[in-house]
Image (tube, rainbow, N blue to C red; front, side, top):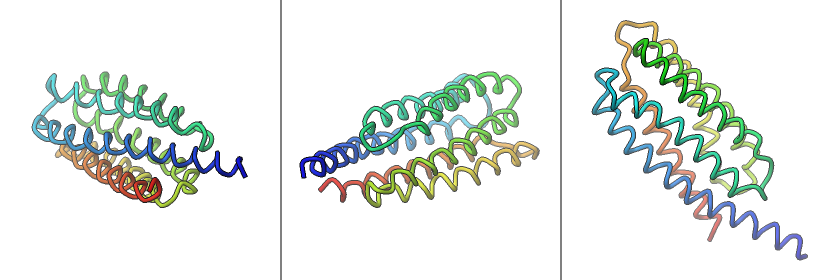
Length: 186
């Protein structure tokens, strides 16, 4: 009986921690998207800094996520996401020197890989309640969006504005997960 109680308590604690993290990720995504949209006309110092900041923040969030949810299962997908996100930040810093199409290719590849990882982590965590279904859907959408960024890079009208929309949608999925996890923690 105490094993079940400890397991339930651990799952509730992880759900509460993830809920707080998802609210932070929602807020960050909205602010970041607004700032990028305001500077998306070209690759200046502010837009490049924002582009590099997003995957760095994603990696830090994955560290927080992995630490807060150790008791709920393996975090291998989260550790992979940390490495991929931070490698993407470096890749974006270099790609910015080559122009918007190069940035879109790097961002697109990251969106595909991290989307697949997010989808896998969401499926593994679905036992925490309904809070991870939005993450599963978001992972699938990220994979499709990443492909569209790579395709957009080949067009003359390549723009960073679509990345702001991507971040906004991702933020909304984090908000949906946070709200759904709120039911689990009650």
